[in-house]
Length: 121
Image (cartoon, rainbow, N blue to C red):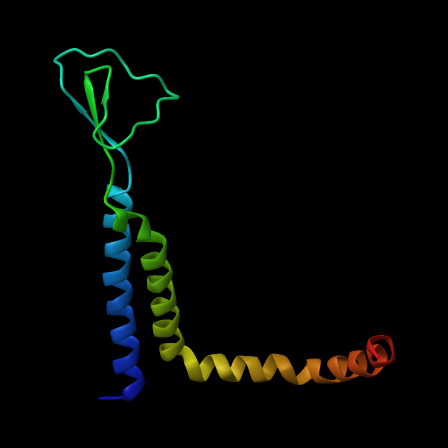
């Protein structure tokens, strides 16, 4: 098999794994109130619980595990691996497009460099 195809497919599979992990961690990254009474009154909106504390003896506060807050890292890793996978699949056409775009810009960039060199120095 082609090396680019293997790298691209592996990166897209890793994207799926990282995205699934990020979604799972995001779903468990919130405080849970366990009800200890059949009809408890509602908690005030400004209530901040401490782990294991019983709010008015009617609720028990359960904090999420520490690793649940790592979901943005897994989301970032997933997006990076998706970018690598897409890049591996469209690398040749992307490079050709960049060369086509860069060719007319070369005189503009050289003019800006000559014009701005005295200002920078």
